[in-house]
Image (cartoon, rainbow, N blue to C red; front, side, top):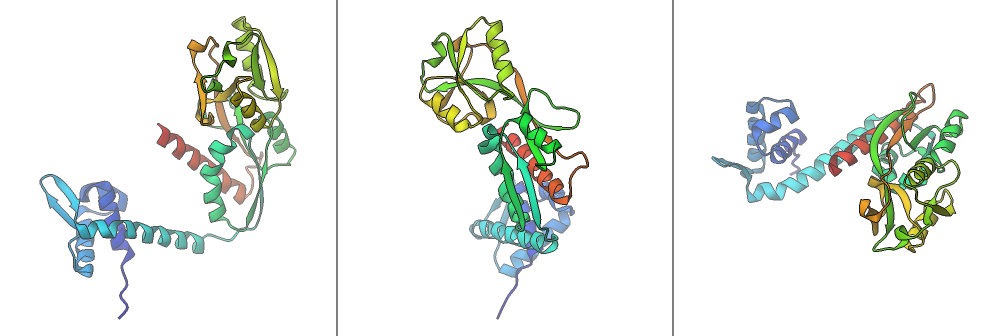
Length: 290
């Protein structure tokens, strides 16, 4: 005989387990404590097993509750995925995203997977380059949405993150002590170029460029080989490198921002949805990091 579980009862159980109690779960479920308690009771009666015990120390899951909890979470996730997929209009088309190569690894995975899952028929085209170049392409209609790294956010943009610009070198490297200082730097319109030049000039530190490319792989390779240092946003420093502080003798660098730019008319529904996924993913990432 086929038996069906009530998803709303499982949702109440998971909310109580996650929140650590009936009272805490009421806000999540938007139900009264009595209603939450009743749903847990109905689930226990359905399964014929006690799932939660309560005493002076609080609430704990029984062995049965512990067995149910991960399976209930998977079932709710599948339920929510099916609901979203079946109730979301199927949009087709293309969204062209511009993003500088230095933040691709850090930020792109945080939103691209969820967006592609929500809109499987939308083709995503990635354009990389300097922030200045990508913003020019946005104005020319060659891309639909841009994430840019800049010293400040222009009025038509939306600031998502304020971050530190830091010096980066090879683990235990010696390049930072060389004079003139070897610096792996971006192309002529790289946003980091001007502040690097200015702080080194003010500190009286002679320097030379070891590479002038927009391809960050080449920049990272020169630093890994300890033939140069580079400036990088603190939240995006590749693993295996040293962040060089004042003890290195290098001057502090200014703060930088990650900004979001859309077309002047705000873009179509797909552009707006891509922007929403970016905002939420970036906020979640920095909330977790904090």
